[in-house]
Length: 310
Image (cartoon, rainbow, N blue to C red):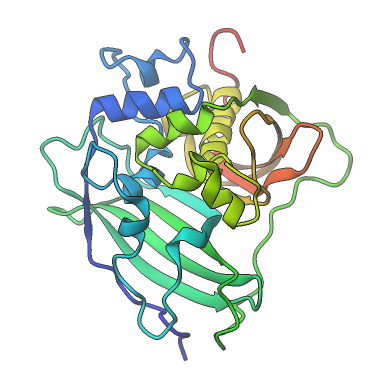
């Protein structure tokens, strides 16, 4: 018997993007001047970075700032309690790519179609809500990308729901093997303030008060900023910066990143292939501190680094 809320479909959400949105996103996650196909709209190979669709559920069709909390309250899930959207953090994201994204949505109507996969009561720590969100051409039904998400509602458990299945883990190698690639980035007080302009306006990432209430001590950087930054690094160092070389990508949000933290990513090729796609494992740590992205896994065509200086 399905658990509470399973199979519930949210109303379809129309989404749109422009070439300018694609440029901003690439800039905000670390694309560099030797990757003009992500940063210059007249480049003959101009492309949207392949993880961009994760932002569309936040952005919708607007080009202005939105009330993040009001947007999250829109539709309750039948059969489960109403959760407080001011106390939610990301758990994990998995992105699967099926078709290349057009450089803008102009001339088409795109929708995000989201359904609930599970709602799991984790007791005192909180509740996990898992969803599947497909980016769909409404006219043809073609699915461009699928995002599997888990959201953790802090301190909102103990309502008698199912505990949920055991999670599938993709740990970094434990055999002492050196990473095949290591890359790093020094964040600043402005990192999250730039990234939020893509459409993810959660006040947790701009003002200290929400983070203090949630026990983080102040502002934390979007987990999806670190997630997207790591995706860019993987593609740049192993995939020749070609968006066609990233088929699937995932990571779990293990601990918060604060403005000013230095991120260090370690990447291992496994040699295990699904057809032409090789499985890659990775993790991201705060330099001198905890793992902040765990369970990192990608399916890629590994062709080497982007041409140019790394």
